[in-house]
Image (cartoon, rainbow, N blue to C red; front, side, top):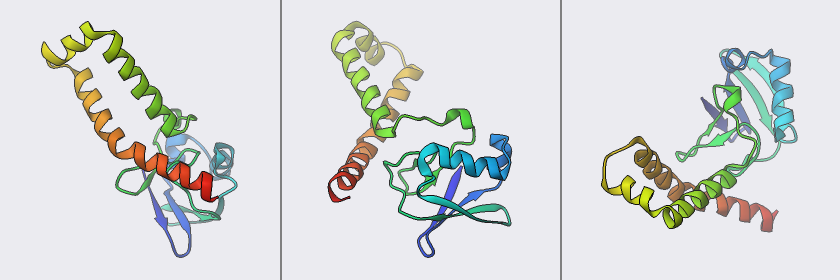
Length: 152
């Protein structure tokens, strides 16, 4: 679900329908955001219309923590299902999957060869899409992480 981010004033607008998806009251949702690592950066501002507005105290980065995910189009997203949130930073998930794919291609050559040459499968489609997304997103996430680490 897209999250609207405004620069002036620095705010996030999260659709109110997220409360129904997460089965939470407003106060519990605010507490949930604080527990997920964004509490030091977000504070609840107001509920207006179809959105919940949060003040942003410091910029949210693509490599940030919490329930927000960074999309390649530059927007922030929040999973519709709370169970789908991932506590591991996204760059770590990319690294682990890329590492596992490299081990499969190196040590499971028979399986890899069957995947590439015999019949079309869903696995091949998922792998190609993952590699495509990783090729664009990993450099961006690493750049953001290094800039935060060295420039503060």
